[in-house]
Length: 232
Image (cartoon, rainbow, N blue to C red; front, side, top):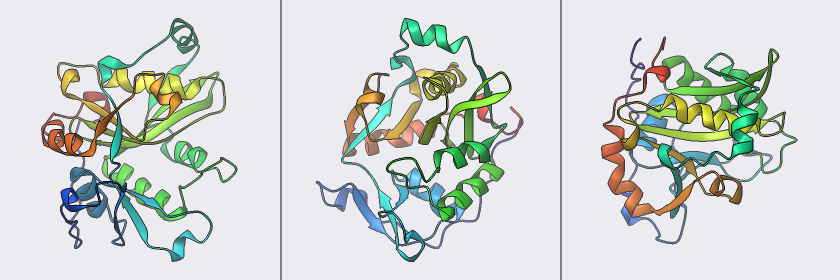
């Protein structure tokens, strides 16, 4: 098993998020989507997401740090009895179909889609370096659901999830939390960006931006879990 490959540092420097508008989730615009830029952003509590829809390639990139961040501590995952039964019908795999997962998440027919070709290319590159991962729910040889995100130390920054079968994305989340279950599990954190009613039902809570930023260095200092190491 090997640690991810560290890319060259970014030529871009993000300012102090504490100086951002206290009521705005958007904290910066511009920069690029090189691996070093994206990793540097996550380590400072930001993530990239394009503005709007349609002509995204001609618009500057937005960098976000939600005022109220959606997070999940692995121990807080709520798995209902029915979901536990459903999970038995699926096989969880990690990093066997990363591009298929991100393409399913980027399906233009999905409402509120935001994953454009530039985002896809950037995260595929991060996957190649060992930073981006997919957690997949398979049944009868078919990929039925999954999620993808970045793993940096004890942080798993979830980007998007999809399902083709009922509850398959929830099963993938259960699989992710299982992969994080080791002696450091209590110090790990799953960042889901914003809490939705769906995610809240699974145990996701909100934390204020300042609290998230204050705790981030300690989370990043935690070793990566074995299943998310290259060759793990």
